Image (cartoon, rainbow, N blue to C red):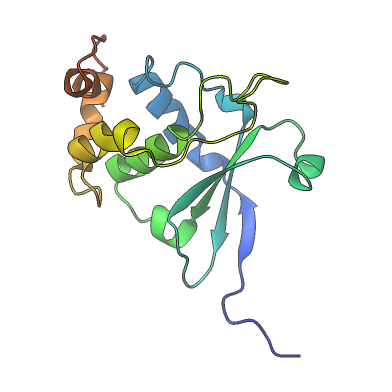
Length: 160
């Protein structure tokens, strides 16, 4: 049998939890429905990947192994771990933004579902942080800049 060239090695990545917590703290209104304790963070090592990070609902068969979680965010570790903290936060925010309100409500219509990249929903993100995260430093302004751009009001975020 021929050996696969792009083998992946998976593992939990709890060291990314402070990034998740910080993003939720910095965007309390936008991400108020997020339950961080119900999100499994994992990473994989591979020579290459089509994505930097990806969120998935925790469905069969994986929910049999990780029943305490509703979502899993998978990170391509070689790339994600080398990013500066603002880019890491922007990527984390992007993945969390895929979780719809009601995504953690067992039995609800949005339970363990994800939102697609809707142009209208993601346009403030792209405008503020750049299509390739070239303006990721704006993450330090947190929700205040997001709300200003989207026309909502919000409290300001703490400094780094």
